[in-house]
Image 1: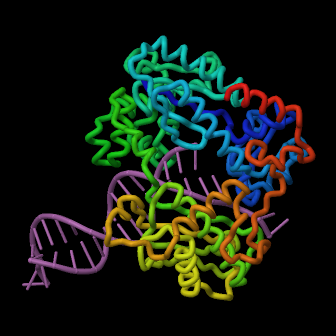
Image 2: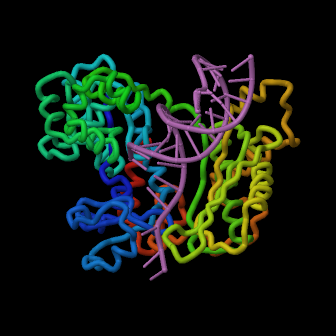
Image 3: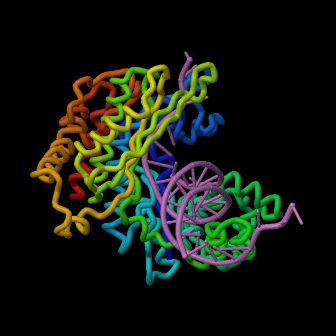
Length: 437
DNA sequence: TCTGGGGTCCTAGGACCC
DNA sequence: TCTGGGGTCCTAGGACCC
């Protein structure tokens, strides 16, 4: 049996753990730059505020005064996610995090009744120890577990835990009652095409001929259909494997055409990307950088350049990546545009250990590993950008807006006492944490 | 005025080869 | 007028996910 543990309204729930005054109120968490809504509390959903709504439309709306806004606080969400994963690993033989708020668990050799009981226990334990509400879906395949989780969230009588045997009347009944677009892996476009063919429900998809689906759509959809019918054909092993590309990009707080602004933004993205690269133990072969003007401004000239710079040698040294960024930017920068976004992507990633085993590949710079290791360790301990590479101008037009950010309660001591937080809630939380360990 | 960021996989089609 | 057949590799772009 496969389980999917999925936190409810994860970002909002993380905020509420430390700000209990948000309980029972409409809460929205905003994207980077406070641009649009990326997480909603149930109360906000009840106001029929859609996902992705630009924040400025919200603040102009009629319910604006009652809605609590928070900027994204990824340091907090990431840390809560790591705690959730750790709690699951303490209990389950195998755990595969799928996203920041969803984790698959593998419960081989347990009866359905035992699985269901474990699901209920996990749910209570996560609520008690982390303060997070979750739902659990249990089924024989990943896609059905995802489907069961969807039911656990939507149908109150499951009380947060839904188990589907896979090939019984109960499963079939729920599949028949669910539109095909609600299936994991079927997005808006596929749903529209499937409906044209008369495939309107999850059940109809599960009964479709995989060969035909493969021919008319893709192997992905054929697999989804088989998984719905109870035949496992997705493996989550890939989740532990290193990423094939690493990207860091952000919109600017203000549009800017200044070379120094754009360069500084790219420098920061390059440093962040290099950190991610070293954390997963890879080397990069090339650096892609891109710039965007504002698509929504039809009245302004548009320019979306991108370029790939091949590194002279495979590297995870921030300095090499910064050199590539400098070269690339010189090639694509044009002064007459107002840029709104910039990004850096690392490509051609290979495993560092395997590569360095070869005597033909000595490191390019002396003591580079020690230097990068030290920089990473200091930044982990004292906060991002404590050590930077030659970026003197810390503030610029490109800096993010995040007017509503809460404190980084679980990772920054200095922010615990910040005004507006609730020391009581924090103390309670920390006490629970220390009694666990 | 103000509209996110980071991934994956797959397919189609072009370049190139014999 | 009529213009082969088959393979590989690479890239751009589409579709999906959260």
